Image (tube, rainbow, N blue to C red):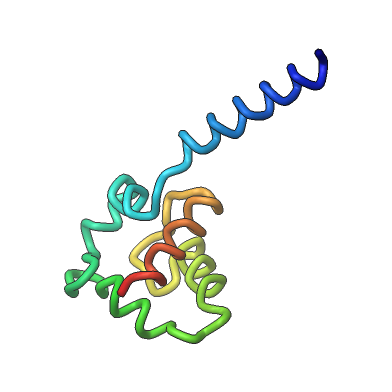
Length: 97
C-alpha cells in the first residue's frame, strides 16, 4: 500500500513539473527575447538562426551563452531568468535552423 501511494505521489510530482516546464519558444516570448530577436531575421539583436550558425560545432557554446546572458556581456542587460530557464532558452536558440 505504501509503495503504491509513493508511486502515485511521485507520478503526480513529475506531471506537475512537466506542466510547469515551458518550451524554449514560450520562454523566448515570455522573457521578451523576441522584442530584440527574431528566429530568422536580424532585429536589434541577431536572429536565432545566425546565433546557431555562429556556434555550430562549438561544444562550449551553451555554457558561453548562458554565462553571457547571466552577466549581461554582449547583451544590453542581464537576462531575468533562472539558470534552468537560461539553459532552455540557449538550447532553443542553438537548435534554430
